[in-house]
Amino acid sequence: MTERTTHAVVLGGSLAGLLAARALADVADRVTVVERDVLPAGPEPRKGLPQARHVHQLWSGGAHAMEELLPGIVGRLREAGAHRLPVTTDMVALSPYGWYRRWAESHHMLLCSRDLLDATVRAAVLADERIEVVQGTEVLGPVGTAAAVTGVRIRTHDSPERTLSADLVVDCTGRASRTAGWLTDLGLPAVERREVNSGVAYASRVFRAPEAAREAFPVVNVQPDPRAGKPGCGGVLLPIEDGRWIVTLFGSRGGEPPTEAEDFVRYAREELRHPVIAELLAHAEPLTDVAYTRTTANRRHHYERMPAWPENFAVLGDALCALNPIYGHGMSVAAQSAVALRDVIRRQGWGAAGLSRRIQRAVARPASAAWDLALGMDVFYPGATENGPTLRDRLLAAYVGRLLYTATGNGRIARRVTDVTSLERGAEVLLAPSVLLAALFGPLKPPLSGPPLTAEERKAAGLR
Ligand SMILES: Cc1cc2nc3c(=O)[nH]c(=O)nc-3n(C[C@H](O)[C@H](O)[C@H](O)COP(=O)(O)OP(=O)(O)OC[C@H]3O[C@@H](n4cnc5c(N)ncnc54)[C@H](O)[C@@H]3O)c2cc1C
Image 1 (cartoon, rainbow, N blue to C red):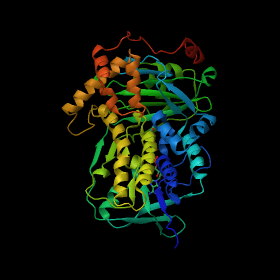
Image 2 (tube, rainbow, N blue to C red):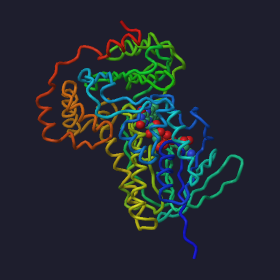
Image 3 (cartoon, rainbow, N blue to C red):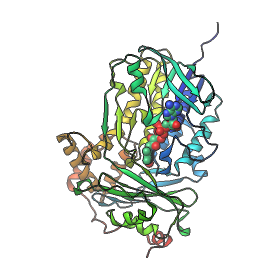
Image 4 (cartoon, helix red, strand yellow):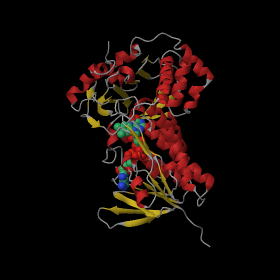
């Protein structure tokens, strides 16, 4: 008797797709990734990843998940030039409640260009001979019934349509995912979908950092104040590989950043709540034009709540839950979801009844955690929701606001806040009695009057 072999097909070869493929290779005999683009050999841009021209920070919650799937990946990224920044030690951040102090390390971020991140992960994933990538190939839709998917139809520009059979199909095609329509075509009911759009636009440029600041420099982040009663404008400067800085300026409806290079620094100086980013850019050399996007809406499909779900099908990454990038959580959620995917299959085994439904419920959990964090802020932007924030939203925001204010002058609370923003722990840690009590007292130290750059950092960046 021949033993049955298992074949998983992943749709989309970006970060969620690659990490899902890696996760599936631990439990399936073969994995095929179908990607529309021809993938570059190294850290090069590609059409299907336009967001790579904007800042991408990877929080430690996501870095740990990636390391679990690909042991040694963080070391490889560091060797390739990614920076590891201790949080909040190497963060110069203006919150809506004042400047954060630079406390001892609680968590960290990995910083590099998105192209470098993807190229490094791609090389590591595709080195596994059980994983094959079918590139330059369009996914047309699933094959099967409302009860079970059995494969996907694909087409390459120079060859006729064909079907790939699969024991599991995982949609990782990002915001462009067509799963909602595919499922209704199969006869399933429409999925519950929610969108909260703060209307934030992103404008980004890459700069060569001043020479003395190329080896190491903190993240600089000027956040908007949603309570200000006007459009929220902010900016973030991240050190990336090769002595470069990537700077993204962003603004909500009515406060959008400029599309023209000559207005970039002016916006950073005049529209942000502090001009520190403009001051730093005065000594940096621009290397690129402005890249612009409005693809920032929070959009979630509650596939885990569907009354019926086909066997052998799952949805992960931005296809399931796309987040406002300001919070920097999309890649971490993708990595944590890939771990959850692998763990459910390991526990249940192939062929277990309701396996896909369990997968869908498991991958919804990391998505939910980040979704709640994003909506906690974004519902306050004008026009983000049809009916505006609910009473619950307002009460929650008042408490989170008090915590952020406390964190500006209390290191223990800053640690608790970053437990959650780094996606290392769930939001319940913010409800511990000791945290509630600290929030009642407020900050223990007085507010800072300006950005906490050290004298060496100021000198390295050419500031007085
Ligand atoms: C401006 C911006 C900034 C961001 N910043 C951050 C950040 O700082 N930190 C963070 O963690 N996250 C950030 N994100 C989110 C992050 O980019 C995504 O979460 C991440 O790329 C994972 O997405 P994905 O793999 O699900 O989808 P995508 O990255 O969108 O990839 C989808 C893939 O599917 C392919 N595809 C699509 N349709 C088809 C088809 N029919 N057939 C074949 N292939 C197809 C595409 O070519 C693409 O390769 C940001 C997003 C944006 C837009």
